[in-house]
Length: 440
Image (tube, rainbow, N blue to C red; front, top):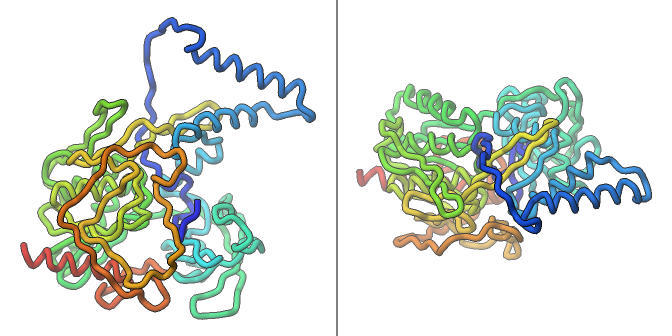
């Protein structure tokens, strides 16, 4: 996957996974012609397995072969269905729970380095002196520019109490230093917030994890405890890869007073619908939602719901376009399989798959920094599920901005005032919200 920028928490295994709980399938036995029976295919697979075990030049591991066969079969379906061996399945569950073992940094790959966007509060990295904006140039002596980004990120993980050496260059310095960091269990909060001028409550949701809705409610309570009443909400879903659909629906429900939040359809039938219950903590407030190329899956569900119901203005660029839903099924031995079970639709019937959320206010730099850069979207996968129809929104506008010195900010610090910060998209979103608040 070639992207102009690769972002993510190193704790995540499936960046764009929208999950429901495991479910079973119950049916009745039905006689089928041999050519249609799945057992015919399994018989062929068994023959090949026996041939390999008997004839291959070296002895083989049957478990590894069968795992590879299952992985190949499921991967033929679409980019988000997949077989997960026990270790990968465990990592997947940890990523959605918000708890993991590692050094505790949020990172981005940029210019042959792993850039620290933010060390997590109380993490081993923060205690060791890692700062936002630092460049990690090597892990265990292995240069970042010579190694696959995801492999290095996984190398920073490990058992609690074990050591890992990372070589960093502090922002604004030239000399590299090597830190010996002891891995530990870290709780990765998915929601952050702050009060901004004019009563704007800034809320950032980084991923939809098991406790995201609870974290949002706690953050709202903290913001309400400040001297300034909440007059509007700036909801930042940029670089949010998605996560759990039930958590995304619960978050959207805090903004929407009534009606559908989303529908999920499988084989042409509606199989799930999320509906607002009313009485949301942030209902009836002016809202602006920030999205970018990396806003995907469950974050697109929230943005689409708030846009279609007229609750929010969407500011940014067209989102990633992952409108499919996966369920995770347990397999014997600790393995699992992630299977796509449907597409989700916004309240007005927009199928997000392969199309994404279209902003009401599109943001563009006045000068393209890298004319050759290509941003990867869902539709660029070779076996992506096809989209359904073309979605056009009326009345959209484009706002241009000057690229700040040094490019995009290499930090996730929340600015006190977006109008003076090194984040032009946040500034445009903030000013759009102020204009909406003035009309209320």
